Every structure is written in structure tokens, then in C-alpha cells.
Length: 515
Image 1: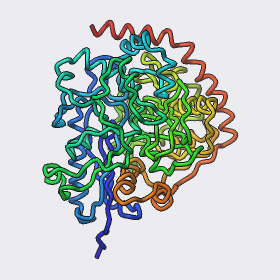
Image 2: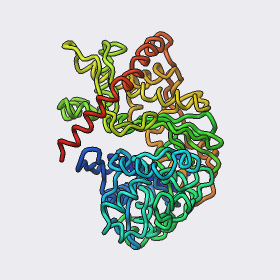
Image 3: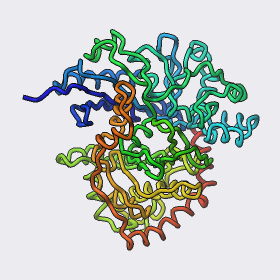
């Protein structure tokens, strides 16, 4: 007979393509996992939005599924943590009703607004306070966009919420804003986490639209009776504020101490370097960690694993690969094709700028490209070039971070891409750094569950990392491969500067054609 755990913690991960809920016991052992998918909407070039009602529905559905699994008694749940994708802007009324779709982190519609704001607020002032440049990906310009383009919805809005916050409000009825997501709002001081009303006024935003920031592990409220009925959990079950998905994934990977670096192999790609103090660089992303007294210097490329998903889709292979995977999974199936191609994909280089690019380029009009196509190029070369191109983007961010003063000793990898040993070895060879895969492929919701354990039962982050986080397979860089990749990376690094003007002209042409 299976023993019922005395204490259970739930982590809900609201990602870009879907939601995942993880239930763990007091030793971090997985009890149940549930998933829920939802769509992206692309109503215009540069527009990528989602209906936040889908996020709430996903949270309710996955919570209900894990509670119905029989792996634990719902009454044993001590707390719930929610993590969410970055830089949303969800207008809600006093009751939490969602008033409009939100532009997500991939959305670049607010580029003209950023340019206008920078004419009256110097970029240096913004960087000094917020630790981040003004970009259409962030929340700030999206709030102004709503104000100007959806005035009726904006007039009804009591709050502008982040991804995890809108789900927490759906569960508890309480509006919240926590520190790790504050970096999307350029009137929040990245060093202190406090709202700067003066900067908000300069940017034309009412700071009263943002709830008072709290620690990610702070208990916001308990499950409402309606949420309890929908999920099968007791009413009043504590819910903590939660945090940024990248930060929760960083915690779930065991990254707490300076120099430790999480490598993200999800829909987006990138890295998060733990730092003991905030050190801003306009080419990178700076946020507070979900752990007090720690910051994350991040690099984020828009299309990580999304690049592989895109290629399988446009090549008409998504269904075939899924059917032929025979239990191995898409990553393994694609890796087998890529492994048949040589290092360097026979001189084919991929630029993974499929929805503009974030750090370190910050170019909403950057465009993806294969360079080096020939009549002999096959599927294997295409897939390998995509894997290598995403790894080159990671190296680009790491080089900028090192130049900014960060120290990186090793990479701790999470995300779906970790299912591909080939891709992990490519990343180790391209960066020249040892890479270790997290033994828990649910590192991001695990981090959210850790916040619940910290906030409800007083556990320390260090203790939870020691007891809950374990490492899997490690990959050492191969010196011969690293030398060849050095040469190819030099070519990769030169392609964007050489092609940027043409990319911008094509982006302008696409916008013209859509009118």
C-alpha cells in the first residue's frame, strides 16, 4: 500500500505553449504531473499575444488532474506556487476579469512607443533605475500601447498584472506583483524592488495600476471556494505570489550562488547567471531572483526549441516525426537526423531570429536565416544547423555577460532540449563550458513548488536545493570540436552586422504588404 505523503507542495508553470503542474512531497519527490496546451495568436506582423483566460483554465485543469491522481490526499497540500512567462501586461478589473488579450514576451508591436518614450526619458536614466533597456518586449511600453490603442479596456482596468499574478488572482481573488517580475516595468528599482513614482510619471504610467511588490514566497491568499470546487483542493489552501519562469527554473536547477548558471532549453533559449549584487548591462537582462539577496543576469534568445518546432512544422514533418518517434520523442527523433550531418552542417549556418531578437541584439526587425544552402543540403544539415545556431546565440550572450563582469563556471541545463544528448554536447562544445543536465525535467514547476514550501512552512532555499535538486548527465567540451566551432562562430557573429540592413528592409516590406 502506498503511503500518503504528510506534506505536499504544488508548482504550476505557465509557459508559452502550455501549462504544467507538478506535485512533490516534502523531500521533493515527484508525485504527479499534468499538462495543458493553449494557443498563440498572431493577428499582425510582430504581434504575438495570448488570452490569459487560457492560463487560468490551464492552472485549474492541471491542479484538478494532479489532485485526482490518487497520489496524495488534497488535504495534504500545504501550498501552491505559480511561475509565469515574462513581460505580460494583463488588464483586469477589480474582480479579476481579464479585459483583453495580452502581448507576450515575443511581441514587438510597441517599438514605436519605445522610440517615442526615449525621446523624453534618457536611456541612461532608465537603465540606472531599472537595470534594463527600454524594449517592446518588456511590459512598460505595452501598458502605454493599451492606454492608446484600447482605451475602453484600459479605462476599466484596475490592475495590470503579470502572467503568474493573473493566475494567482484567479485562484485567490487577490491582485499581486512580486519582485522577480518587476524587471519588466522600468519604474521599479531593480536594486530595491520598490516602485519609483517619479519615473512612472516620466513614462506616462499610473503606478497605482501595479500592486505593491512582495517577495515571491509571500502568501498572497487562500483558494477561493470557487477555485476549491474547480480543483478539488480545500478552500483556503495557501497560494504564494510565485515568480518569473526563468527564475523559478533557475532555482529548480539548483542555481543560487554567484557564478552558477542556468541554461534554458525551452521554447526560448538563454541563460541566467546568479549574482550577489545587481550589475546592469544594456545588452543583457537583469532581474531579481526569486530568492532574496540574489539577482540574475540573463540572456534570452527568442527562438530556442521553438526553432526546431518551426522547422518541423514548415517542412511538413511534425506529424510524421511524432508518429515515427516510437516513444523516443520529437527531440530524440530530430537529433538522430541531425547526428547524421557533420559538425558545421557542411557549411550551413542558422540565425535563430524568428521573431526579432532579444539580447544582445535587441532588434525587433532581425530576421532568421539559413546561410550556406546548396543543392546538397538535406534535412540533417538543416536540423543540425538549427541546433548549432541556437548554441551560437547562447555563446553570444555568455560572451557579453563575461565582458560585463560575470563569472560563469558551468552550465546547468533545463528544458525540453535536454532530451537531446547531441544538442547538449553541441552547446558544451560551442561555449567551451561543462554542461550538466538537471535530473528533474520539471525544474521550472519544481522551483515554483519550492517557493510554496518556503512561504508556507519556512524552509530555506539552500536546504531545499540540497535535498530536492539532483544532477543528471554531464557533458564536457571536446577540444577538437570546440576549435572548429570557434571558427564557425566567428562567421556566425559576422552575419548579423552584414545582413541587418537587408533584414530591416524586409521587415518594413512585410509591414507594408499587410496594410
